[in-house]
Each structure stands twice: as structure tokens, then as C-alpha cells.
Image 1 (cartoon, helix red, strand yellow):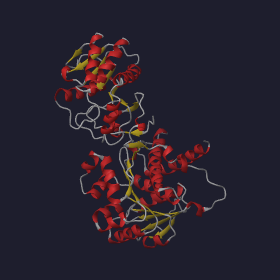
Image 2 (cartoon, one colour; image 1 turned 120 degrees about the vertical axis):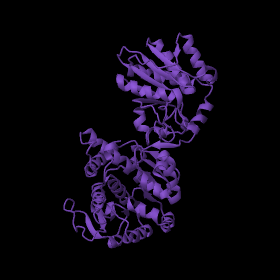
Image 3 (cartoon, rainbow, N blue to C red; image 1 turned 90 degrees about the vertical axis):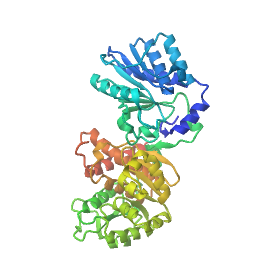
Length: 498
């Protein structure tokens, strides 16, 4: 199967129902038990397993039975009604009992654990855990921290919505998650990465893409590898397009400079900066190759692509220039104050929607909320839905930034990006992303590929810096620029060897 496909609960339920005659629970239990054994390691302490009232509890019973077979001291906690268990889960409980396993209804607090396994709730959870289940989740988190032991979640950490990534309180804070059949989008965005830890997919010998179209994909190099080609020798600066950056209002010139510098270093042949600040410098002494223009003359340049928004401000002049940008026959990236102005002035929505080709917008959650007329909480509760609504309403390709950036295209495709780290939560990072994307557009990349590559490279460059000891605390947007150039060239060189 393709490990980068993502499925939401309704699709997974269909897949499970089509294979109901197969031993899926036994396969899930075996896959989880294998990982559990390696996680428990050499510790000579018992394994705590929490079993819930549904099929996730059945998975837990299977794991418990298999671990007992391998001579682990298993303490299984189950407080559900055995009579009400689904058929497969009931069979797993009976097999566990027949093998000599016993259950308790409370978590022992005077035992040190080598491993804790969460099998309370799987996918499809739509409300906060309550009662004893809520207490067990809180206790499991506390005990895992106290004993410094792994906490393995089965399919999805209990308390996390596997479709959206929104977590309820309380929620299991897993160090490891083994998810079954296929990846779930909620594990990769919003609260998902913080709740899941390391994720593995056990496909249970199924290939769901043969049956149902995936609900989404994880961004990988394969999504844009056809564009990662070494440059021909017989080229010149005109071969790689001209990119424009429109922004740099008073006290915000740095935003436009960051976008321009990275656009230049990612290979655009020429980069023009149109700056609104009347006192803006006429040369960037750190990057003198950038060509400075007054903002109102930028669109007179022969541009292939334009990023509008970095440091733009919300003045009447900024609004006028945004209107002109929306009408310009260039590939367009909208970010920052361009998006805020768009949200404030309803007249512009039609101009954007009716462009010859779809633009790209890269909002953070607050900007997305303004564009959709809702709260930031509404956006973050279902980031995938919000990104899709933006793409549909404005007929744009959208990257909803944040933990697990969600990319939605005008043809209703969804990607989630898995690169990036908390060091990127600092000023200027969005400006660098805009510059990356506009550079690729200027070099004639298709918009969808430019967006996927820009987002993926942006996070991967930051990850490279952290791996080399730069950040995450104190990582700056400017440091990502050279890292992105280096990594992009590595990708091109490696792809050229294939």
C-alpha cells in the first residue's frame, strides 16, 4: 500500500465492513504486540493495558493475550459491559480469558510500569471522554511520566479526533502510536503530533487505495519530483523568470526583504521588490542583487509571478495595489495583509474568484478565520474543513499554516505536510514561505506543485537546521533561507541520479 495516503473515519468504516470476514483484529493485535515488545525492552516491570468498550478494546485484548504468550506480566484494566462488546472484541476478550488472562476495573497505583498501552477509544471519537475513562487517561499520562516508560496508543490516542486533529480533555499523550489500515489526517495536524509521538502504520495486509479514493495524502518529494531537474548549461537569467514581491509598508520592510532574498536564492532569475514605505532603502546591502522599485511601479515590470502581502499593511494605497495585483496576468501568491484586506473588502472576492487561473493563498489560522467569517477556534477545530472551504470560496490553492500545514486545491485534493518544527513559530517565517513559492512559480512550476514543494521545503529546511543544532528555540526566518537553498539543490542532485 501507499504509506502516504490518508483516510477519515467514514472511509475506514467502509473498508472495515468490506473485510469483516477477515481476521483484522488479530492482525492489528499482532502488529501492536511486536512493537510493544521492542518498546518494553529489558525492563522487568509489568505492562499496563487499558481496554475500552468497543473494537479498540478488542485490539487491546489481542495485544494482552499475545504479550502474555511471550511471558510478559500483563495487567489489563477493563470496566465495560462484556455483553455489549462488538462481536470481534467479545471474541478477543474470551480468547484472552481462555488463555488465563484476568481483568481488573482499576489501575494499580503502586506498580512501576515498563509500558502502558492505550486501547480505550479508536477513531471516530466526537466528544470528551467521561467518568472512569477520563480518569484512566489522566492516570495513564501521569504514570508514563512518573515511570519514564513508553505510552503506546492503538490506532489513535484516546481523546484525539482522528479526522481533525482536535483533542478533547483529557487526551492520551502517547510517545508512540500504531495506527491500522492507513494513516489518519488527525494524527498529523493540530494537536495530533503532540498527542501521537512516533507513528507507525500497520496496513493489516490491505490496500485501501484499491477500493476507495484516499481522503488525503502526506506531502512527499514524489509529489513534485518531476520538477527537480538539473539546469541545462545553455541558459541565462531570463530562463528562470522574474518574481515580484509587493509589500514592505512602513516599519515592515523586513518582511518583503525576507521574501525577496529567499526568492532569489531559490533560483528566480530576477527578483523585484515593490516597497510601500516612502523611506524604504533603494538597495538591500545584504542582498544587492534584489531590484528595488516603488510599489506603484512594480507591476510595470515583466513579472511571471507576484507575491502580494509581506509587510503590505492595510492602508488605502495597499488596498489599491492589491486590486491591481488581482487583475494582473501573473501567477499570484497572497499572504499576510493581502489576506486581511481581502477579508475586509468584499468587493475583492469576486476579482480573486474570477481570475484566469487560481491564485495561491497561505493564511495562518487567524487570517483564515477572518476570510471565513468565523473564529480561530472554529478553524483549528477542523483545519481540513477550513482549508477546503477557503479553496472553494475563493477558488484558490490554499496552505493553511500551522502544526501540520493543510494544503487544499481547487480540485478538492487535500495534502498534509509533515515537515517543520516549533522553531518556526516566529516572525517572518510566512514571508519566507511566500518567497519560496513565488520563486518556483517564476520558474514556471505548476501552481499546485509549487505550493506542495514550497511548504515541504520550508519545513524541511527548518528541520535540517534543528538537526544541526540551530534551534528550535531562537531559530529565525532568515536562517531558513540558506538552508532551503542547500536542501533544494540536494534534492535536485539526488533526483538527477535516479
